[in-house]
Amino acid sequence: MTKTPFAILHATRASLEPVNQYYAANAPQLDLYNLLDDGLMRYLDAMDIARATRRFLAMLEVARDEYGAKMAMLTCSAVPASTMEELRAWDRAFPVIKIDEPMAKMAVAQGRRIAIMATFPATIATTQALLEAAGAQTVHSVCVREALQALFDGDPAQHNRLIHKACVDLVNQSPTDVLVLAQVSMAHLVKEVQASVGLPVFGSLDTSLAAVKSALFS
Image (cartoon, rainbow, N blue to C red; front, side):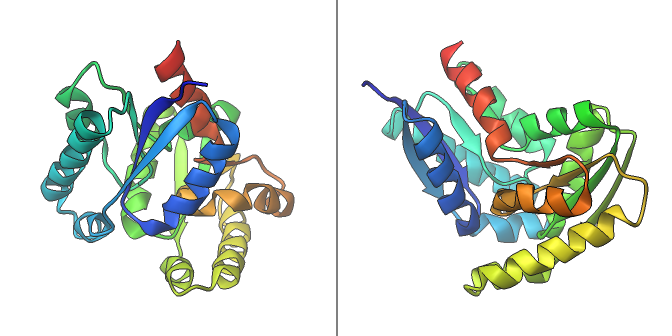
């Protein structure tokens, strides 16, 4: 089978394993190329959007010109809409999506009162903007940064415990129709959290695949 080169752009090593495992298992027709620059998290954390955008543009150029990728997906949910506009304008014939864009549309289709669970502060504003652009009426959120630190420290069990507790507390704070796990590093918890909160829960991993296939093969 001839595979289609597909570039995945990462701003943190936390996204590398879950995205590759899922896409390798569910999209064998794609030849995966990963570009990781975890220094991007520092730029995004500091709201240095111009520098982050330049780095993503450089990664796109490598993906297209050196690896022959036919499309790219950004896995970082903290990337703002302004950056995505620039990346798409760079080459209109080269599709670029952000992994959480399909998730936002699917979440709002299930309900307009959305709760956001995040572990990286810059993610809150970008995810809220994405949901509101998709039609969300009310959005409330929580960021548990210590969960992300636990993941980086090699303690995924503590990461999962902190996320689980924070999700339950979050949906009890305000009327909520849907909960979104804003970062792909939490996507493996969708079913577990949904069982606890009794609401639809969306992650950005499985919801992205249909959009990728549509852009590449439709």
